[in-house]
Amino acid sequence: MSVPARTTVAIIGAGPAGLLLARLLRRSGIDSVVLEHRDRAYVEQRQRAGILEQGTIDVLRECGAGERMDREGLPHNGVELRFDGRGHRIDFPSLTGGRAVMVYAQTEMVKDLVALQLAEGGPLLFEARAVAIEGLEAGQPSVRYVHEGREHTLACDFVVGCDGFHGIARAAVPSDVLRTFDREYPYSWLGIMADVPPSSDELIYAHSERGFALLSMRTPTVSRLYLQVPNGTDPADWPDERIWDELDLRFAVDGDWKLERGPITSKSVTPMRSFVTEPMRYGPLFLAGDAAHIVPPTGAKGLNLAAADVVVLARALARWHETGAADLLDAYSDTCLRRVWRAEHFSYFMTTTLHPDPAQSDFDTRLQLSQLHRVADSEAAAAELAQNYVGSPFE
Ligand code: APR
Ligand code: PHB
Image (cartoon, rainbow, N blue to C red; front, side):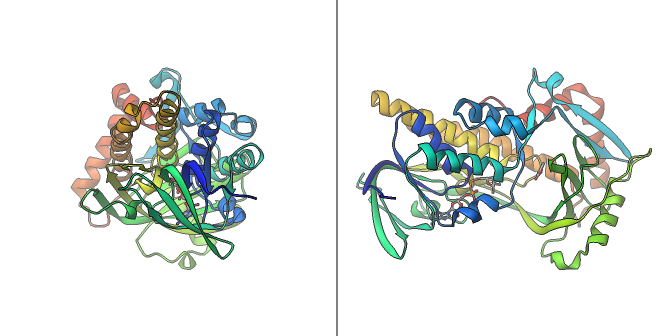
């Protein structure tokens, strides 16, 4: 593929943020080049989240990337909160004016966007590692990158760092300009994929004194399950039987519900953190997605925040492209951070309400249960949870 030496928008990273941005820009007639460090197979197979909120569903449809999602995705109208031996359903449409979510794996969304980009979009380079972002202060930005053993320079009008938490873009902002906010949690998630139909049609978020557990799914025949485990847990210490036995204990409920077991096809441990960078812009450099913020996974906001960021950015760039006006670009960071902090609070709330902290007292456990009962008993509290879960409309 011949790669231009200059483009309008240089996008670093082909995760959901970078790929969706490239697609949206293309639809507005703005050219871009996407540089991705890893190879295509790696990017398409990486197991990540699986819940699309209403705004993400809508934008994928609008940009012509929703066809397979609408065929294969599983619309979900609610979730179950399980605690004290009972389940309580939260109904999304009735509490949110008709909004809902979709179970569609992030890897599938990434595959759809990669295929579209390669067929119809501008250059998308795999195994192209950005090594430096230059010229930001001079207003002549460029990205230096290594591809097929050679170093190249891509000049541009804007650089967008969609390069995830460990990328180079955030580090290109001088430290006296950036402010970061960080919180780590004293537990992690052991996640498994299992070849067994999900034992519930809807997700189950379970609070138990033994720890949190989550039942989710990828398809009608593949379950995704998580267990709260101590930080530093080695998945090798969790043979399959031990995982299923522990899931049984944490999902235990009055009545005849049963967790079906099946072959476990993957196991991994993910730590939990909250992290926000302010501002999300430095001159012609914009940060989007995990490059700018991280949420703990309880509540499934990470992917959706990444999508929301690039929707805001694509609109701002389209306005600049059409009229020369930079007002929406100037508002980008503030606009995104409003949603980011809402999602940070919701993810923190879901995490700390559902996970017993290893150091917590019985008093703290009673407070968690009281909060969960409140959500189960009060329509106002349930609506607050549901509205955060399905997300507010993008912009
Ligand atoms: N040069 C080129 N590419 C890079 C570089 C670099 N120096 N550094 C990182 N990348 C690539 C990574 O290989 C990765 O493919 O940037 C991409 C970042 O993608 P994600 O980590 O998926 O981040 P993002 O697109 O913001 O998506 C956020 O993904 O992990 C979930 O919880 C997260 O669901 C959220 C979503
Ligand atoms: C998932 O299916 O991976 C998932 C679902 C809901 C969450 C987090 C992760 O809150």
